[in-house]
Length: 349
Image (tube, rainbow, N blue to C red):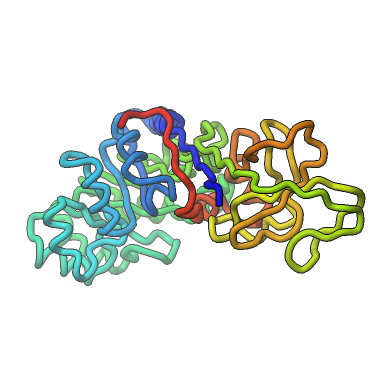
């Protein structure tokens, strides 16, 4: 079967980082979130491009991701592990100079006992009820923790994509109540928090989705093109059906392209009978069900049959596709399958 090609524009990712860096309050450092293999785009190439753009602090979800990132970047850049210091990670954290963001009293105990003097940060829960220490826990351990010289104290906004949501101000007030007066760098804003303004920036911002062209950073440069090869063209008569379960019926004679790509490649089944693919700037409707390896597209209106059709491009961004599937751009990005040939443009080797 022909191979679909995912083209990743490293210059666009670097430009998005620089734009978000400029939006951050003067004097605020701008990090970069590259967890989940840089949101599915390849942590090694993406992180090197971001480092060349000026990023010096990176965030990953797991110590294993930190190991891959350290191999790509070498010594120097700081790598923060958001899941903290998990059991069994001690050797990796030490040997690869990773900085865990400690999330619980158990993690604090594990880290300070097993790696005394090794860099660490603290994550606080300001209302999201996910990772981090709650206010009473923080009050209890803050003197001990601060005496051990953490490198960063951070929290995470739950509703930053909705600027008017009351949760943003409530979490900011909680973060200030928990951290005002401490002499430790603070971080509160990911992409959405940067766009909320300087009250949320503190000492370090850590953009993620905005680097890759996703909402809520509407001014982001598109970073992706996903071109799917046309395998076969079929003439379909009026009244004939296409695909599993006969969900699409031709109302008049149609020319249907069978295209390589399916839900095994991250093209969600919710795109069935709803998404568009593009021949240049010309939209072509996806007809019938998305199957494991194939989709079918109505190309009757095209002058010439193309060799490929784009499902992601400047004409259909990742969030546009997510809207059709009833999901978010994060899921589309991180679902892009391993069968795509990944082609990088821009950046340096």
